[in-house]
Picture 1 (cartoon, rainbow, N blue to C red):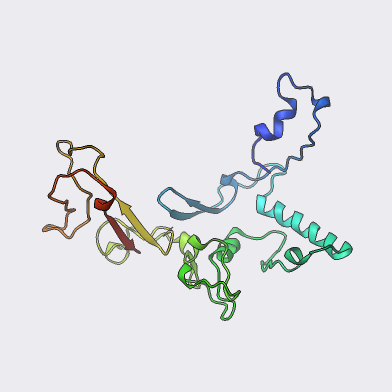
Picture 2 (cartoon, rainbow, N blue to C red):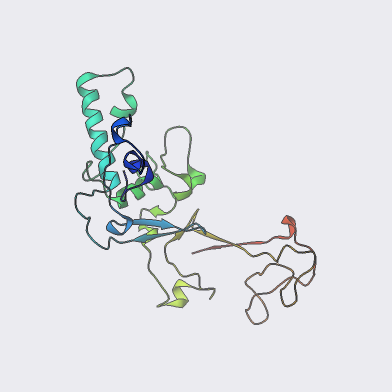
Length: 236
């Protein structure tokens, strides 16, 4: 499955290759490009943001999760008709979607977050996950990104009301969600040199509180080591 031809799917008619001698059978299932579907982006800072579909799928392309759902349904039908040595992983798999053949990515995001099977409520923290079968989660780091109140990755509060959306005044507006537990960890270390360069503080910035609300720096100038690196955790 891929939105575009790749070397893996097209190798059999590469220059100098006799396709009739290639023993590999290739099934190319055209999927939608990221711009043709909604979903989330997660950057290197663990900031997850939801995006909307921009254009409809082109040609015969389908969403990859729809293709997988279709293949799963066909395999499950075969197990139902023919049985198998260990059908449980297929037959007992939960597909609680409005349309099991066309699940929505928002539904999948909610499922990945996890829930308490006893209460049916969404899990709010990975620390609450249990190994006794009473909770579920698709990926622990996303636990807390989709609460009972809704999908936090869709937050678009912006800066229209800074007093509400950014109380500290540090420009940490409620836009998307930070993984995990919506905590933004800031790393700011000085250059790894024996002495600090002119004009560059010797320690990491710590956003206030300073005398004027500005960032403050350590006063000592010593070589940076892991023990001198600081972390600042913020929640929004």
